[in-house]
Image 1 (cartoon, rainbow over the protein chains, first blue to last red):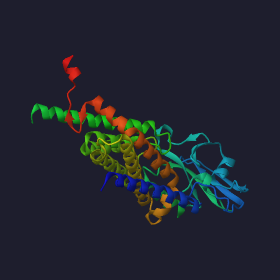
Image 2 (image 1 turned 45 degrees about the vertical axis):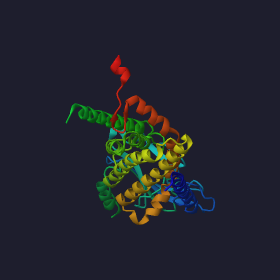
Image 3 (image 1 turned 120 degrees about the vertical axis):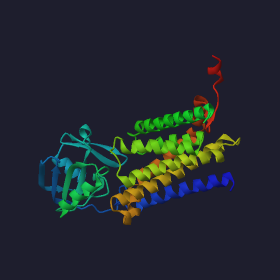
Length: 159
Length: 196
């Protein structure tokens, strides 16, 4: 195969990949980082936020009411705790809750959240809540280094 | 083993160590910039400049170390294996790319070739590591959704590597060859050093 043809094919692969996923991001807003004005964002009332510091201390906040468009997990957290965060692209990344930081002193514990016992696959500022949802922020060992124990913990928590 | 081949082997080991160090250092240096990384480029350059064998080993060592010790925590086994496997593949691809791209043709065509290779290798890397992520967290059935959820990051990764490979490959490999004095495992004596 001629080199120019090969280069053209490689570029075609890149263009197809980039175009496909750009379109898919817009077609599936619940999984994409882009805001979708067509998505109906409802008020979220009676939200419960639990903050588990991983050392036996657990704080529970109930009866939180959120009005559109600020009805995400992140907005609920901002109402009940002092939060340090930064943005990675359009995603918010929580660095610390009430001065408890991710990976403090290399303890490999990170803030992660669950909604109704399930681990959402999206950033906290993209996860919209429904009324009566229960959000749990846990300061747990990173999923990326301790999957087995975390799954065990999750199963116990959910069950 | 004669003295010459022993010297060549020692130099090759040194080159592998130097490239692996540079790859890890570049990964740490760019770790705070989301999804823009220089490790795959450094591993590719190792293969491109000194052959697939060196590139493969550099990829193995660099990602083996960085995958375990990085600012975000060590990776779970499926992701770790995917990362290391992909990085060795990138190193090997660098050696093969040398044979395809390193011809007396125009520099712009070489740069385009490097950019295209960088982009496609990054796509392969992202697809494989995302699949490993899906497997690790029991989401293999929802692999497409995992890809879409990570699409924003992947697009930045692919586009940035396409640009980095295209712009930097020729000057960096040329500079490293001149500085380290080796070419595809062949010793090139440093005359100036020998004479002074």
